[in-house]
Amino acid sequence: MAIDTRSETLLSLAEATKVLPPINNKRPAISTLWRWCRKGLRGVKLDYVRVGRNIATSREALDRFFVSLAAVDTPLDSPSSVPPIPRSRRKIPTRRTKSIERAEHRLQKAGI
Image 1 (cartoon, rainbow, N blue to C red):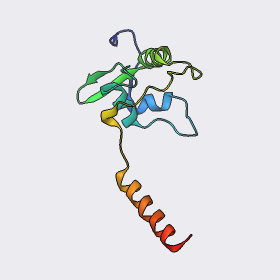
Image 2 (image 1 turned 90 degrees about the horizontal axis):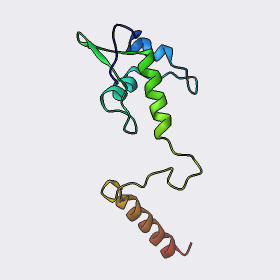
Image 3 (image 1 turned 30 degrees about the vertical axis):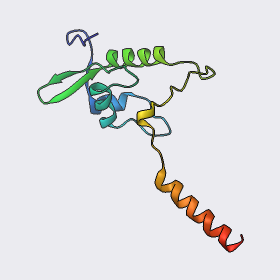
Image 4 (image 1 turned 90 degrees about the vertical axis):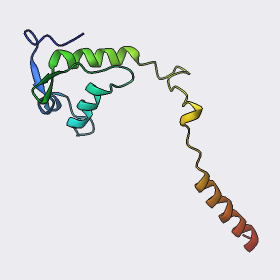
């Protein structure tokens, strides 16, 4: 749903960060809200409008965003709560593995 500028309370991203509650005594950064607008989070995007060269959102858009995020969440006790990382995106720590193997070889050679 798009923001209705006539009926919704517009907020700059800086103002929106002040509206959100702090988590671990930190409020989300403006760049976080910008990322939620442009790229989304878990497939959900924060609605926004451009006002000149600035981006604005609304209190109502924030509410819709968080409700939508809660809807896509899966229960923590569900076995599928953490989606598997696609094989193409997995990082193989070859450098670290080789370093460990060299260290183990040195330890064996030293009799430790």
